[in-house]
Image (cartoon, rainbow, N blue to C red; front, side, top):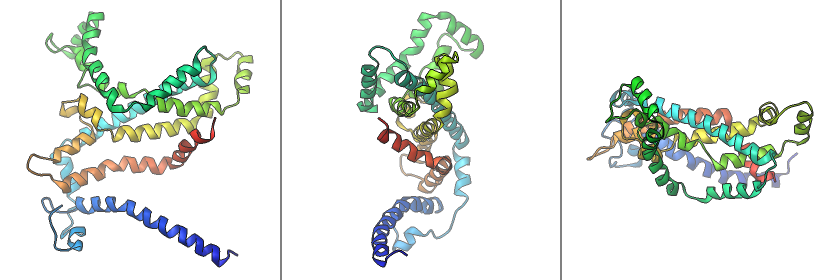
Length: 311
């Protein structure tokens, strides 16, 4: 039987935690109420707190209006395509780099790894300008190095000299610019390296005795045993890319390439903002995030503890 003093101590601990946790729901509740308000009535001055928190009428059609006013479906598909492609690419590149740093012996490995980790201290805003310049110059460089690439692409896309095909494929305003620069991550390499180090090296030696090379060891032993780490990295990457705003805004000008965070700006005009529609669109944007969190929440804990307990 739990002593009454212990129960009282537990109550003192849990009540503040519950109160702090409840405050996390306030923004979500405010977003939900605003999404159901009549267009033009949201964010207006109210005589009482009740009038502000409870709409005079519930407009569930705001969610359908979002799909009618802007190409919300196209934005959804763009976000899904970019998030899934970056997640797959970043998981693959990070796993390959982590295997090289964790299981292979080569000169200067630890020094290179320290330099690799040092890139995590560079703010993303600093690397944005070089990446933007690279995306801008890449079509011209490729055309000069291999003119036949643009000649063959123009036959497929039907472009002209003034509208080079390579520019459409790999330059600014392309899916290439949205996806490829985000497919490499020092954090993902560090996370998976720590996971790979926890796998006994005796398994590598046994596989080498059986005639396996490094690619076979990587594919048949390391990756299957590292599924929790791979899933953790995939979840973190998808969530980060799904909410990414600045990089897609910088490299795209076409509405057809907009992702959901940029599409939400469509409700903000020069003289006002449709808050109810914007909040309805924001709630729809949250749906994949909530689903992924509910499915993979146990991997979040694993991802947070891997770097803390492995040497």
